[in-house]
Length: 190
Image 1: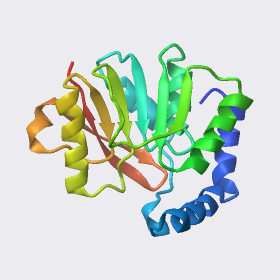
Image 2: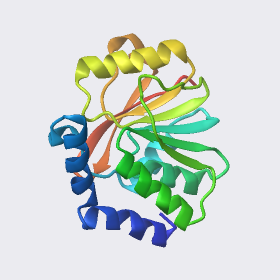
Image 3: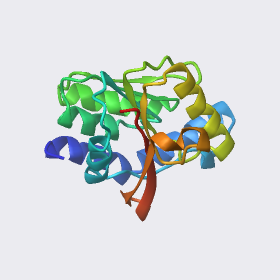
Image 4: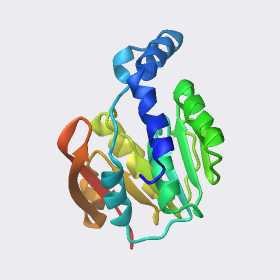
């Protein structure tokens, strides 16, 4: 990432354990186990390779499970003229990401608390689906619903797609913070 100051600020979030503190708070508030929240990061080089593997030029980049906005910030650096939207149910992470947008005077990025099941995707979106914590059946349901409503959408996923769309899917194995080679799947209609 070229913006070294922003990268430093993103890394500070994990260094001080803010993510774990906020997750404890949220888990108590909404009555779920702290274990449902995930931690880790996908390096810039991995994100860049996956984004570049998509043939379609999207009108918007949407990150589901955006956390503090890593992917949105990467996207904004690569394609500053194409809007980037990140959604998450974790308001503390969104709050922190928005503070970085303001601090670094970035435009064309929006991070907000929103519900994946109620969100309106567009046919022209490229979606980064942070779905590591979704079980296989729920993941298939979510992805199939998005594709049924938006058949020309493109999706980058940490989890595989079911057989009904495999002809439009390519598999990649790239580095992430939690393992040397994480499988990724890219659904691309072009």
